[in-house]
Length: 223
Picture 1 (cartoon, rainbow, N blue to C red):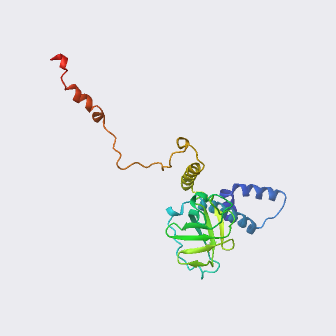
Picture 2 (cartoon, one colour):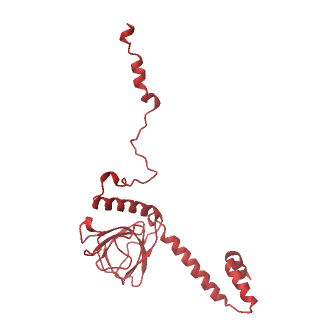
Picture 3 (cartoon, rainbow, N blue to C red):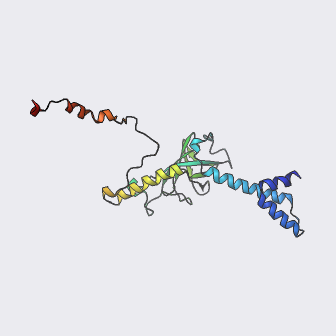
């Protein structure tokens, strides 16, 4: 039938399994096969979505009524994390007070999350681009939402460009704080494929203009 042909063309592995099962006179319900396929497709889709940069997608979920949308789940992208309970130089220390400020975006609008109690996987080592799932209701005050283990969950995901930028800057700032010699530090991160607007390369004639000028000066010995 049509579904069986679809399995053969789209999922050859399942076709081989079904053929082997039939050889042993076992019976499999089509509902089980459908469930396996749907679960597989959802997993692949989730892995792809988590690695995308929301800022480049045409999606908008904010603003929402955080207190009224009971059970509603939204996924936002982390832009920046700071531990505002300590000075910036001590943010990476694990034994200091914990109060995170998390800048979140849906790609179009932003919201700030405040975390005063530890959330699994969420810390200063979490790179920008990581996806965070938030479940309503959430206590909020204007553009600030208060997050904890019961209303948010870290999904993961890596946006490669954001990760590389964040990692390079983190290594540079860590070297500065540990007193590494200045000439041994990594250079400041500059994104590739960018050119200075005022950069003008001299032409060949400009480089050798001095030669043309000096050649016109008469040698005193020849007079």
